[in-house]
Length: 161
Image (cartoon, rainbow, N blue to C red):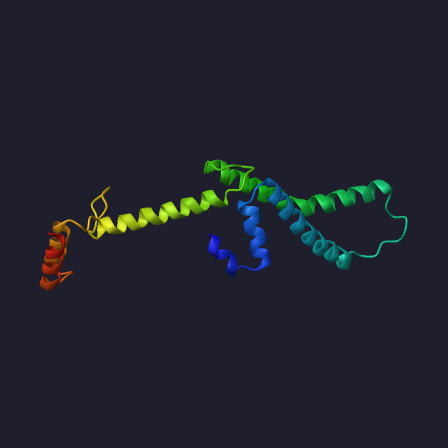
């Protein structure tokens, strides 16, 4: 996960910071994203809005329009934060803290578990045991399976005894 930073553009890094960062980092990311989103939305509304004669709207109508516009622009970020909190609760992660290290550790643990399972499936290790290369039986098993030659086995046998 940490090595992925070099291959990302600024927007991807912002999203990664929001997904894994602490609460303050998420608020900062939401603010930056909200400003960009609101400006684009405001430009679209200004372009598509028909011209109204002056005096058509009361002050209350204008306040309601602003409330719906700015509140509507904030809704995607509310749902984004809600989904982040739901994911963190479901996986036993901190809601307000930075979870990048925890996710990296889980990723490493998963990779080690898969590698160990591959070793067990290939017969290089028994379940729960690691490979002991100082045991002559390990080398005899390789010889029997045809993984090494008789000369390599004899050399290793002389080395170990």
